[in-house]
Image (cartoon, rainbow, N blue to C red; front, side):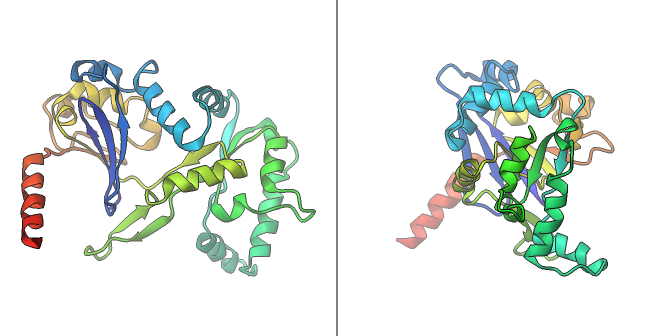
Length: 274
């Protein structure tokens, strides 16, 4: 099970993932009170801007560059090309049709895709894999240059794949938070302008406002139907669990956070070490 946890507090938004001790905190600023959070989540003037500024800090892109890139990605009449299959996945497909499972074979196959005549007329952005973003045409021209010369925005998948979840046989977790800042910066300098972090099966709201404010949860999930996230308005209004609609590919849950208990347990554990 791969889970994303969003802890919406009065002064911060914390994004956590199972299997990782690290957390990403987005400061909300002194004017972001709990009352304003209700109307600000996903609002371009506050909520979205807050996230844009945080991404800009990591990638060294300006907020304006991010906005321009985002608009170009959703250009009318164009789509996104996902060619981010991992090396193991690509090798499995090659094996089925008798193609050698080598780096050169994968490079040659990807060259056929990125050099398709007129590709930029129909594709606004492309999602690449770590190996792919570092590859070149046979003549030495980097794929990144081929893509950008075609008027296509290069992107990169930044998670590191599904791994076995310790202590839970048969369960998987998508890893990728550890070292994410450094990977984003490296990919940006290579030429990537967008990033994809996949692997969400469950969305959890917790921590004060996240537990009790149905409008915040509704606003946070608006426009995410294409990601498989659909809320049941009735369940959401009564803080049900789950609050996702029937048929939602992503389960949306509301889980109370007993922060006092967590603090007590950690304090007790520290006292035993003395």
